[in-house]
Image 1 (cartoon, protein in one colour):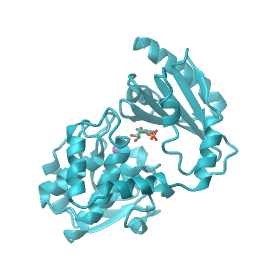
Image 2 (spheres, helix red, strand yellow; image 1 turned 90 degrees about the vertical axis):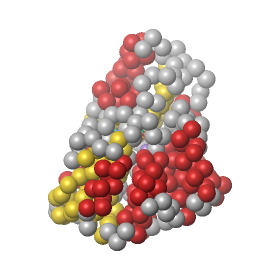
Image 3 (cartoon, helix red, strand yellow; image 1 turned 90 degrees about the horizontal axis):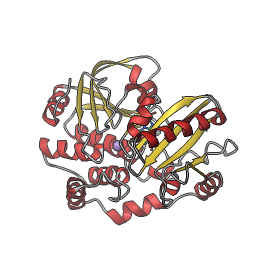
Image 4 (cartoon, helix red, strand yellow; image 1 turned 30 degrees about the vertical axis):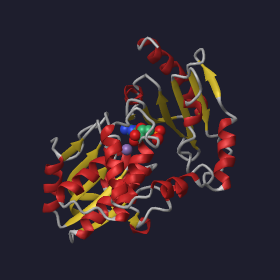
Length: 319
Ligand code: 5GP
Ligand code: MN
């Protein structure tokens, strides 16, 4: 069932024990929204846990309370309310999504939301789940602490490319302005996100070495080469912005193979094409201009198949 922020708040108010989770390959919106909601629920005296079936990317290590995020249990745990943030599909939560028993609430902003939860509060017009969490906290009691503001500013800023992407609108900027009023420091957060270990720059140079432009300059793709140690590529967020920013490119793709699982994680970014539809047709999802999926096989099998699909989609869209 679909509901509003008031419905979501009512669900949360009824629960004594809550588990929060978010998507694998967590980004700033996933982590920032989850920690801010954790702090809000904790303040209300609700017993709350955070689960994540993945590693934490180093670039977000400045966020508070990361040490409270635990791996999901092996056997299902009873809980009053299981909350999935920033994911439109249960499979996106890894094993967290199976290891609970209780009601579920999904708070999300993906176009491709699959209505998997008992109650779904989705706002596709929100630039980030962080905007929705901010509104909920303001609606409930208005008290946004500096820690919550730091988390939510990070959530919003990272999901809209620091207020540059097409999802940036007056609501996004207004939410950011309120968060600065609550104590978020944009320059400190930007500085933290821009500072990176040397290994990330080395990984970026290896990824950019794989750049290929096809489809008469409309498709640019990069690959995370299998030779790079997994620790170096733990955090490849933002790498796809380079092919995306090439003049004339309509669709950028990053192929990230997983050696152990014989799968390839794909990221799509676009200027005009609806890549959410494209990713959905491949079993994934996302937003109109940023989407992804995971395909079985080696990158050498997957890549030509995907490039053909993208060319078809561009032709169908008249681009
Ligand atoms: P990214 O390329 O940064 O991993 O993801 C871009 C967007 O697409 C994000 O909003 C993310 O949630 C969504 N996305 C990425 N991979 C998948 C996937 O396998 N399934 C679904 N449903 N969404 C995905
Ligand atoms: Mn998001």
